[in-house]
Image (cartoon, rainbow, N blue to C red):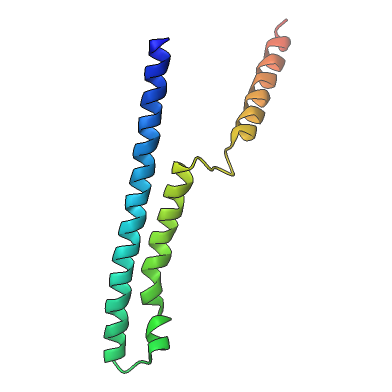
Length: 109
């Protein structure tokens, strides 16, 4: 019984640590990207572009986009969301391999 409680406690601690890591990642993402965006906009404004031209420049938004994709996958992992390899998929694969093994075994009876 104590082992089960310890196991649950360790899993809970691990989940909290992963959640904390995601939130730290999110804060760093926002802080760095705001800083980079402001610097790039100011630089583009200095080069004679209008604010909208400077803001909608791909270089300004690329960091948000590509780092955001990484952040999205980090969040999907932390919150245990996997639309492709979920429990139903696992169960189908298990049934498929079990049926294959059964057919193979019946060949040699």
